[in-house]
Image (cartoon, rainbow, N blue to C red):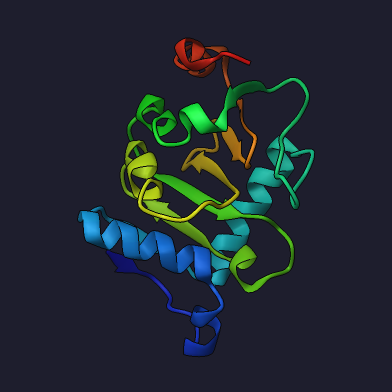
Length: 159
């Protein structure tokens, strides 16, 4: 596990969801990187500007036009359908300390495996080229991106 910029100790304590992901990835031997605030904010701002998610807090959501998957059935498998490569996860933009950070995952296809070992959380996922955006909340996983990308999820789509 790599850490590019560790927040001050007091701040790291308040990052419950981030700590859970770090713990899980470490126990699974999956390479992740906690990005510093500045790098994280650039990623978050770029994603928000490109995709204009409908809801950034309280049951995060993208849009009515997004592809929808049932969270219960798909949260721990959806990332296996993502294109292999680097990706990012970030959280509700609610002004909490953890809303200011992104976690970089060397192979985004392993995200579901990491999350299977954590407690429930709501989050956004994108890749390093911002080709797609995924939101995951308690009820639904929403996906937006090119048609070719979305086709890969058709077998999971039951909503």
